[in-house]
Image 1 (cartoon, rainbow, N blue to C red):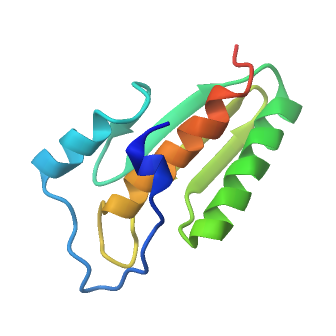
Image 2 (cartoon, rainbow, N blue to C red; image 1 turned 135 degrees about the vertical axis):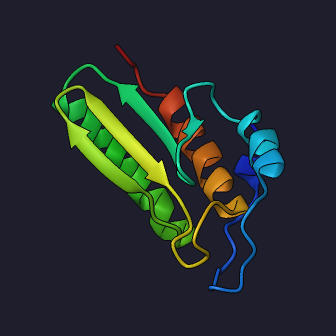
Image 3 (cartoon, rainbow, N blue to C red; image 1 turned 90 degrees about the vertical axis):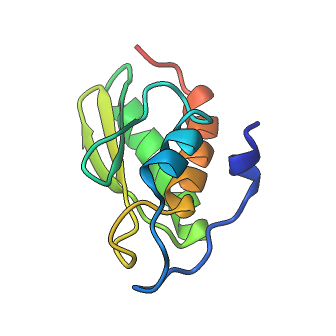
Length: 114
């Protein structure tokens, strides 16, 4: 398990500093290779067997997000789950985004993907 996945998300405000490009790149290297940084957002799209599998994984992600009080954008469709992470309160990427992504990687690894 990634060290990031062991951490907890911290409460953020408009004063919370966002990560530099170098810091974000370093943390990105600790995640599944399917994550990418796009316009101050951490994104990943997972291919799954069908809608039920995508919805099940989205539900698991939602439960983790509620525990962490850090919520991704989710788009669920037949055979896919697209995720977007950014810290809206801070106006960009923070460590919280990478912590939640690592936790998502952990549950996604247990799901059969197509």
